[in-house]
Length: 158
Image 1 (cartoon, rainbow, N blue to C red):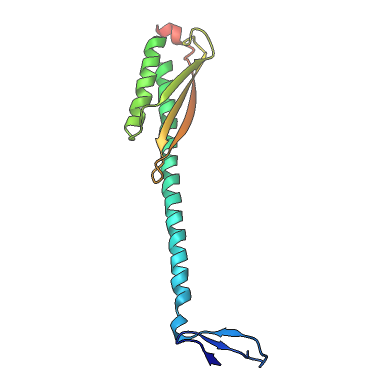
Image 2: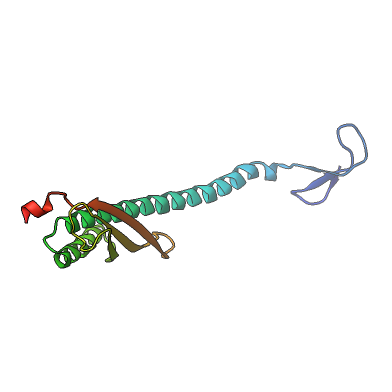
């Protein structure tokens, strides 16, 4: 065995005695695999943590947008007029997202009948909100829609 340096040595024979070159481990190399494995695992753990935080934030924001759409559609079908319903639905959706720290959404209201509040008609409220990703800072648009029927007995109440 020929000594190259203090840390490396080359053997010109292997276990069977043939004449190939092989690297022989020295005491200085012991434990390096643990250090390398730890570094790789730290990178994977950090990546997994970022993915978990981002996914949980997106799910929470999605839940908030779905709740805002549901509350806005309920407010619209219970309103006395279309104008009042539109104002209530927009304000309720904005308030619902504001409570969760999100910017005001865009609210789109569509009706299956004209006028919108015809008994038995269906009203669909669609909420579009841009939410920030926690680590990356980019914004993602989340859309949710909710459809509610207008009460069949509405005329009797008015």
